[in-house]
Length: 121
Length: 490
Image 1 (cartoon, chains in turn brown, blue):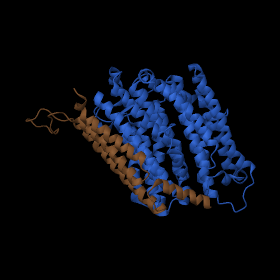
Image 2 (cartoon, chains in turn orange, brown):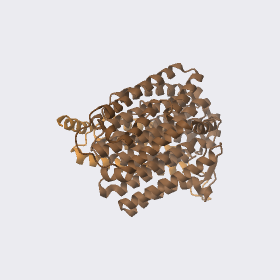
Image 3 (cartoon, each protein chain N blue to C red):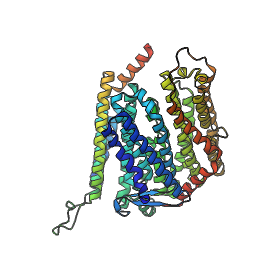
Image 4 (cartoon, rainbow over the protein chains, first blue to last red):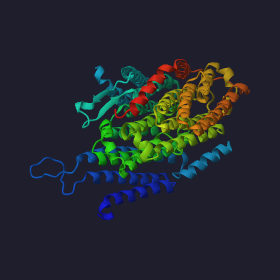
């Protein structure tokens, strides 16, 4: 059992870290959303790979097959994907509204504009 | 009918949200929301009465028996948070019409009520479910509607606050998801009672430790536990008045409840104390949180921000109580969870009334107002004293319980931090009182009063007073809840 035999975990963890790093390192709101999506998808892939059984087929009962993949993690992730889509839609909608209100999608610029305005008052 | 109450607790608010969208008219949407909150209160009171003496209600959703189907479980430990959420929701329903009319554009009002219904459904769902994955779903329902509610605040800064909360909240929610995934991979079960039976065999397994870590960090983000609170002051202070009552009063509390349920109801006390030093971590974070939160609150100029930072401090007390991981500590944590929810809800309600009156929430806007609105500011005074923990307030009841728990556990340094934090609370509450009572009011017309809003604020404050006078009843329930959780599964 080499470390590489757990390659599904490695991929998930590397993607997770890439996503988190993008979220933290970028001030641009759209890029933050991209990072968040990569992060979430990594977790989805982790779950889906958990349910995969080697040599297993789709869990539809058929006398020709005896080994099936575990359907429950896949169903759970279906729910989580819906949550992810809703989050992305809301996040992008907020980014659009922020662009309308501030004229920028850079977090720092938007904050500066607020500070400049309250200073001028 | 009565056996379906656990399901109705969640289903009614969930269905009310699309109903709000369909009726569209602002008044009708408010009516739907108000009826929903009333029904939620009736149901949660009924559940509370049924579980008050340690009874456990189990409800198999859709007739699928546990552990295969999703199970709703009500015992004293979640009857209390459910009651808190419903009480705050009813107060918000009284409070909302006037506040919403002033702060939300008319074409969006029905959507605002739909979001409130969804938020309520999410909070109640987290409270009632006995299924580990179901918690995640309701957590995200409440969070998503919470982001939308915050984004509808009056200033454009609210959009940034909502976005920041969305990013942190989603990371937190996904952490919880990872934790649940690891639990499932280890045990093959998602039912909490079933998990609690399978988990002890796995003590020492590294994936189990990781799972607890992910769930703890994820829920700590949602509960704004120090140092994961960065989103919270902006979110609470920028949210519109009605939403901030529910967000600040109930939102973080229910995440803490969920954490307690996972920690004690699934992983078990032994695991928290021994395998992972989570108990010490919680005590330390609680201490830092109560000191930093209260200290920063003293330097805030904006009253809503001040109250938000104060919440970070007060959450510290609850976290410290959980960190003791014994019956007394957990009892104190449940008491403070309930009391602080009511107090902070009431105070944010007062802040909203002032916002309506003076169009602002800085201390300058509070100058001299106590003479003009004596009734409202009497509520603020009583709530503020509750935050400090002055005797004869609800805050004192729970702080006293926590102090006793700390003494019997020998945690003297935590007790000292608690006293310092209470003194700091006196400072920040004192600053509001100084501004409202001892400064000269600005010249100008007084805005019309808002009876519904004052009634809501007083409702919450009077409830805290009632708890202060008749504290034994609530303390008993909190004790039953704590013993139920520490006693093992269910």
